[in-house]
Length: 472
Image (cartoon, rainbow, N blue to C red; front, side):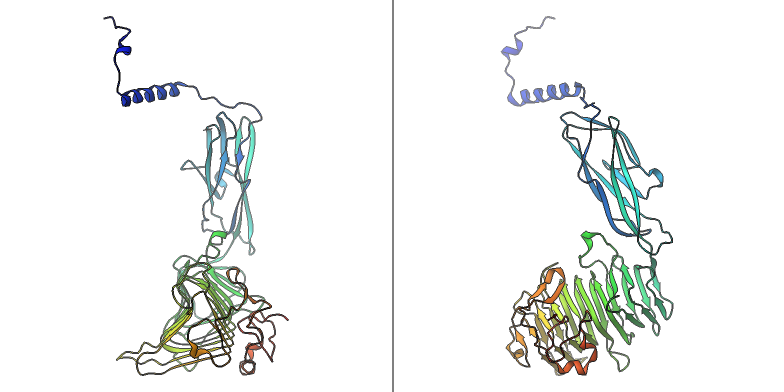
């Protein structure tokens, strides 16, 4: 059979068929082309990072995953003959290339001017070191005989690991290694945990510090106790809601937290019910509570005294009390700025919530303190029912529309001029209206207030408002 050579001239194909034929022919042609590689001995890859750094990682707990890019800077493909962990099977690091976890990859092609990600994570084995130790490895790349390396570096930290445990009665935690909490840790009824200066406690997601007995935290000015989340990478450093918080349950009594920082939880501190004796449920002295997804402090019919404390960066309340209680704050700084999240709630909120069954007395005292935030109203105190609600605010800077607070030396709706709200610097600027506006008599009544949260001596004639005395 002889085919007429003019047939393709006489038949007009529809445009979509012509396009389909062209694509098929193009793909077929390109599939037959041999890939051209850059084979010169000077061939080198480019990297987005020459070193992959991990912040402190607790032994046995895996790190976050980090990544970096490798680039082919040439107009021809590159054949990478080897990508491998230099430490091989003994390396604490793991790499993932193109979705595959490998120790070594051979003869990988990288197209002209193309790039790809390599993912890295690490799990560090424990040793006998008390101080953080460095763990190194590298990823080796061999291209046309040239060897290049991306360094891997992490700080490992041994720790006391506590998982879902009720502590031995009258335990003492010393500053030898950090304490890492997973799930929950509990202090039993009529038992006590004492935490000595400089101890660092890191809690995993959802973990809670549950206190049925007594918690005594004995930090000092230069060696504070730290409660925080387990992730120490820079990304997680200031993220709220990474663990539950410290929860004082109904039977708990005689709790005392001094010179401590509580960060990145859901609730910094939660206190339930009236004291079982004549002492407050909890006394806070020189404590910072910051970056909470719900509230820095939450009390239910509780009695809590706070001296020289800073409450900042909570997504709902800085401090709140429900069903009455007795809450006293002296020389405290409350900063409700929207640095980590935006709150629709006031900085301080206290309610007695009376109903036909229960009557709850409410008492709120605020002296020589600062309450500031972006909203017009940062105070909410509500009384319902017939029981009493006693509110006494004196010598405070307050962000409020309630003119009833414009007494007792209070200052309304002025900027306290903190040096850096979102940088956790609540020192007063030299022009602050809070300087020298405090009531000095309270220093004699409560001697711990003669010094500020950082141990600076207060002016005993004209103390500044808030937790920090300005150096003059």
